[in-house]
Each structure stands twice: as structure tokens, then as C-alpha cells.
Image (cartoon, rainbow, N blue to C red; front, side, top):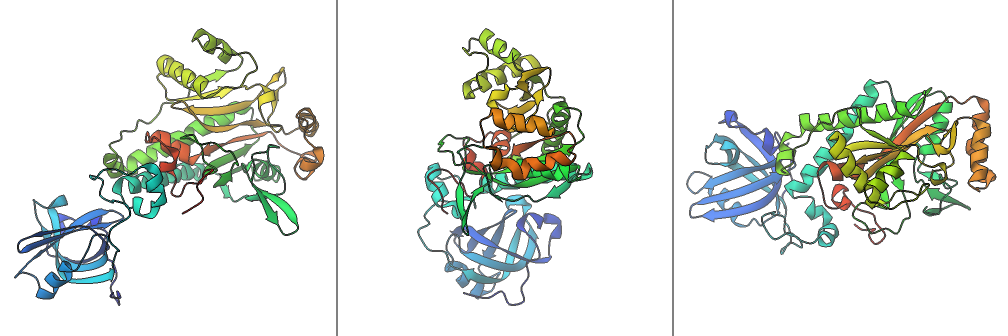
Length: 445
């Protein structure tokens, strides 16, 4: 194996263009394909931005270059110094004529997973077992470039609107929603939990006077679910705003965040969308809104049997999605005013209809993307909610006591990044939208 010494990459493959004809460049990557056609030898060199053809012809390059190419295998890691040549028959109408090749590392053979997508695709479990190799495929790299731009677009919008990015604790001293679906973690001589949502600490920051914030980080749920849209660890973008009028303010913010994220993808990911053969439409706002209890009547008219006060299952959400698509031609819609009995203690009730809460879910293509709405900021009402949920007040004193010292009205939401990516790109399984999936059976790699 050879060291790079003073070599520095000058260009990624995508940055090498036909108008650079005659220019010397240094590219680095993996030998995705090798072809030997008589006196012509070709390397398909892959890197993060795509691939470029390295062409060596006997008699036109140094003999040691030919010898070096002859010992190369697929997925070996190399660096190539060479001259750009415009060639209308080469991919991208350009190629590199090598002057020197350094072999950085050899790849063992056979490969445990086929990289080239034209081969028979492996099962998802096999792909996830070999994930670092699976991620070398251009389609998979495209997914995460798009996801990166999606998040960047949403962050840019929030920062432009005056939101502070904050980092709230992942370890907490009590279950944030009072439920059982939490991972307990030893913490010296105490027990702690991985957070389900950065919800409660976001509220405390609003009480602190931060006013407009967003958190971006991991959340965990110890839910033994094996569906195509559940993970035990997922990432969420979670804005929180103070001094709101009601939950409608959070809905208007969320649809703007969605639109700006998608718009940023459309503007910056043309190549990646082409690789995935996806066309994305920027949604129109405002998103349609459906409210309880009218939702029950809509479902019953559509033939779905449901009682007032019941929660919605996946079938109900899909039926509502079809209804909204037909009536409003929208893939997005909000569900508002859930029955309070179905929601956590920290949501605000509708004062004139206390049976219902100012609690909002966003549905996209039939799947819940986020949960949010207006929080209860009145101390007495918050305590009343905790008692009604039959939770131990002592477990939440660390949180509730600060509401006695001046808490403004507030609200927000937590948007699941992997679910959003999955539905945006029409992926079949959420595990394709996370680099290293964590589900009830998978903790490695």
C-alpha cells in the first residue's frame, strides 16, 4: 500500500468538466469497475459526487501505469493524478489520462454485498448487515444528500426567522410523557432514561425567555414495533415558540418549515432526484385542517367504523389522507383538537370544550410526521392535567414548579426526519432513510 505523501485531492469527480481539457487533476476514490479491452484499460472511479472514467492506453501512458491497473480489483481505494481529456464518448464527455496511480488500500474478495445496482438487489436485512458497503451505492448516497439538504433548508428558514438552535439533554431523570416506552439507563447510583422527545426542556427554555428555539437531535422509544415506519431511535426537528395566540400559530410555522425544506431540496438536489427518478412538488399552503369531533363523522361517512373518543389507527389516517387528497388535492394535512384523554398532560385543553385539546398532528401521504400544538402554560391547569392522567406529581415537580414564576403561552412540534425523508422520496421502508437503523432486533452495525 502507498501513502499519499504530499498529494491532495484537487477535484471530486463531478467537478471535472470537459472544458478542463488538458488540465492536471488529482482524484481519489474506489475502483467501482475495471474493464480491459485489448490495449485499452478503463477504471470507473467512484467518489462521493459520482464517478469518472480513467482511461489508459498502452503506448500512451507509462508502462508502470498499465502494470498498476492490472493488479487492481473492484473497490480498491486509489488516488489518480492525470490529465483531463474531453471525450464525447466517455461518461460526462470527459475522462482522465493517468500520469500516476497510488494504491491506498486493497479490498478483499469476494465482496459481501454487490455494489453495482444493475446486479440483483439484496434483501433489506442483508443490506443493513453490510450497511457501509450498501451506502456506497449512488441511490443510497442520493437519499442522504437529499436528507441533508432537507434539514439544511429547514434550519436556514428557522434561523432566518430568528430562532436559536439549542441542544437539550438526551438523558433525563424521568419519562417525559409518563409512559412505559422508555429506555432506562444506569446513571451512577441513579436511574435515567433516554428521552422520548425534547419537549419538556424546550418548554423550560421558553419560560427562560429564549422565545423562539429549535432542537435537532435524537429521540428514543422502546416500542417493540416491526412496521416499515417505526424506529427505536429517530431524529426530530423540534421548534418551540413563545407568546402564541393558539395552536394555529404552530401550524402556520410548521407548514412554512416544510415548504422551505422541500424547496431547498428541489433547488439543490437535481442530480440526486434524477438518480432516484423522483419528482418533488412544492406543496401549497395553508395545509388543510381536519378537527375532532367532525373527523369521526367524516370517517363514518367513508365507511370506517369508529366511536367518538377513539384514537386514529393507520387505516383511519390513510382513509383521511385519501379524503383530503380528493377534496383539497394535498398530500399534507393537519389533524387538530384531539380528545384530551388521548394526549399527554402538557397539552392545553380547549377551555370552552375541555374534552378536546389544542393538539395537532401533521399527516403526509397517510403517515404521521409530527405531533405538536399549544402547551398548557398555566400552573394550576398543568397540575390538574397531571392528576387527571393519574401520574405521580412528584415525578414532574422538576418541570412544573417553574410554571409558577411567569410562563408565557407557547407551542411547537417535533418533526420526524426519517419519516419525512421516507415519504418525500416514496421509500418502502423507513430503515432506508436512516444511516444505521435501530429497531427491536438491530443494534449493529
